[in-house]
Amino acid sequence: MDIEQAANFMSGSILVMIGLIVIVAGVVTINNIIYKHWKSFGWKIFPDTGRFAEPTEISKTSEPSLEKKNEQRV
Image (tube, rainbow, N blue to C red; front, side, top):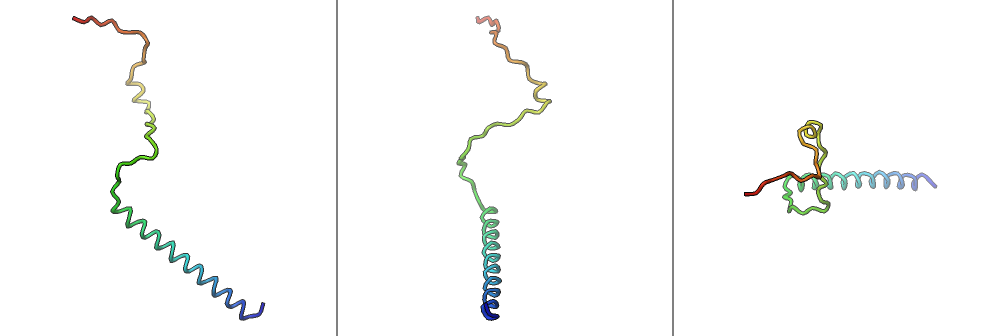
């Protein structure tokens, strides 16, 4: 490899990396613009799985029982 080929390879590598940086910056910019003005349609790919209860919420609830309460209907 002579000096001219090495110089071409180095300048080509630098230009390719600058091109990739410009493309990534453009994608990030477009993504930020879309994010600011995006209105969701309300479609959900994954259903909500609920949330975890905090210890204070657990202490407020009563234990479930399998026994039926005696209710008098009039």
